[in-house]
Amino acid sequence: ADIALAIGSVPIPGVWFGDAAAARGLAREWNEYAATAARDHKGRYGFFAAIAPPDVEGSLREIEYALDVLQADGVALMSSYDGRWLGDEAFRPVMNELNRRKAVVFAHPAGVGEDQTPHGIKAHILEGPFDTTRAIASLLRNGVLSSCPDIRFIFAHGGGALPYLAGRLATLSDGSGDMKPDCMGDLLGRLYFDTALCINEPALAALRAFCAPSRILLGIDSPIIAAPTEIAAWRALSLDPDLRKRIERGNASALLPRSE
Image (cartoon, rainbow, N blue to C red; front, side, top):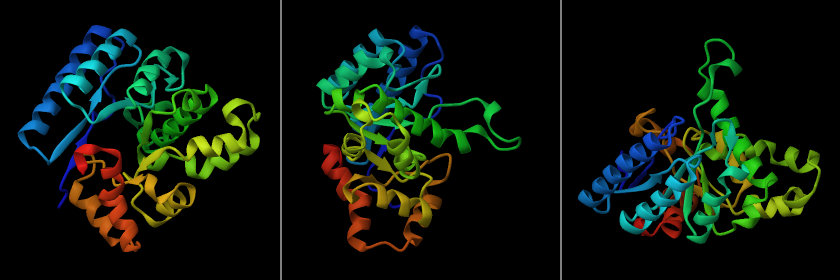
């Protein structure tokens, strides 16, 4: 698909299935495999390391190994684990360590149950974007975005429904702490978003109206959707050439040293 450099991450459902030992083994297997691919194809691949935040001790160890030894480009998280979103207090030690390291953190929607969507529609189609939105709201509500300002969050799929619902969140929330509208706007303005599954005019228009051009990164959902298919859709969009270049590579180059 003429992609020069790709940063890979573990897809749904991640590595957490309720067993800490299994999660540690799966995370290590992915991280070492991805590091080998990046090393063997230098300049073509990078990776976000897998961890399992419900296992705090294991996550802290794997963050150290993945970032210091394997030279991962950042850490990949699911939007929720066992019904708890990323802002949950149980995950605070992991967030504090990622903040200390000024890590790039890529958040992808978690696997969700099939009981919340209309019959015949897979849950990830609708619930995935909403789980991402809930994760961002939980980071705001619990003060993680303000207390961990050095984490550089990237949210998949244009931040889910956030561009559409951020105004509603600011207007109807209680206005305390990070939920104050001015504070909320500043904190959300620091986030990054990828374009996976929002490579269409309405979704990109909402995302571009919501955040600065420097905060949008080209993302695709390969192999769920073939890379050539998403790149063809991307090329078919009518975009300012300078903006296109920034989204395709310039913004990532500023965020991820491997892509310079």
